[in-house]
Image 1 (cartoon, helix red, strand yellow):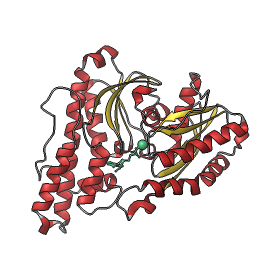
Image 2 (tube, rainbow, N blue to C red; image 1 turned 45 degrees about the horizontal axis):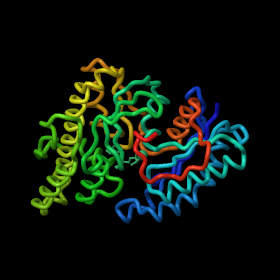
Image 3 (cartoon, rainbow, N blue to C red; image 1 turned 90 degrees about the horizontal axis):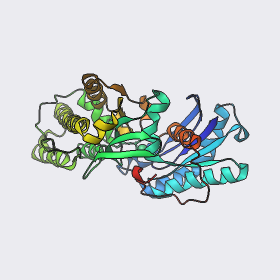
Image 4 (cartoon, protein in one colour; image 1 turned 135 degrees about the horizontal axis):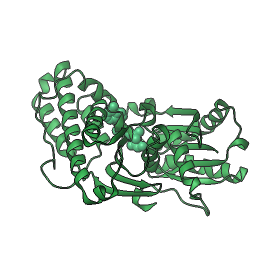
Amino acid sequence: MLCLGIESSCDETSAAVVDSDRNILSHIIYSQIPDHQKYGGVVPELAARAHILAIDEVVRKTLADAGKTINDIDVIAATAGPGLIGGVLVGWEFAVGLSQATNKPLVAVNHLEGHALVPRLTNNVEFPYLLVLASGGHTQILLARGVADYEIIGQTLDDSAGEAFDKVAKMLGLGYPGGPIVDARAGLGNPTAFKFPRPLCDKPGCDFSFSGIKTSVRTQVTNNKERIANESFINDICASFQAAVVDCIINRLQNALRNDRVKAANPGALVVAGGVAKNSAIREAMEKMALEAGLAYAAPPLNLCTDNGAMIAWAGIENYRLGRMVKEPVAPRPRWPLTEL
Ligand code: KG4
Ligand code: ZN
């Protein structure tokens, strides 16, 4: 079975052809980062227009790269939310048009489920698994029981992890998107140079709070204005900030493993997904934790952590297999929690 997947919920216009044997036949990710960089973040209206300009070419080239035509495709899948609604509309309506013109089945993919299921495409992870889904818009610990069946075990009470990385980068004048830059600079710094807080870490439960760490970084930066041009100061801030985020994720996961519902479900693997799953320190710490807990560990390859069409195509296949295609017109949704599938 061949699925064409389309993603347009943020600043990547992406499409992929994926088959049900877990092969990615072709994959194009057209990033708009250069369009948004000068504004220090994604500008929704610019993103929507850039998607309109790119989508036709991205889909045509994806099919051509796979050596296929639209007639060879069995099912079409596109992100129908959550995300920046202008962009979601572009990809979703494009997919609706293709599906109607070709009479092919259509799956409305939840973008978060795309992130959540991609480790099954790349690592063949079996349900149930304990998942840290950390992106620019969300940070959650989820019990993935099955397709369309997720339980939130913990989530951020304020900023997402990606947002915290991006804001810290902005304070330090490091550019956008901040996560990869902070990650790289952290590798050059001393993680114990600054003692940033670990919010909620002495508390029961599995929720996160990242805004306090960010505020504490801001205080250090404000108090050390004369050192902001100093490379080692920046590297140390990045390393110390990243260490605080990693400690919070691991502490919350330790509680999650003690959670009664998680214990009853007995997940076989610890999995990380979403853009922040690219982070080297988070990957390393979670792998170590999984080993200690006797769990398998999986993280998608780096290019499938941030937004991409292959994860949407795969989620399309998984949902289609269960008969979860669109049966009547649906409107895309800016907000669409994983618990409302
Ligand atoms: O999943 P994603 O591509 O988009 C959303 O669905 O939000 O995630 C983007 C986020 C951005 O905040 C970016 O800074 C962050 O992922 N990110 C990272 C790294 N690479 C990307 N955060 C930390 N370390 C990284 N290496
Ligand atoms: Zn995403």
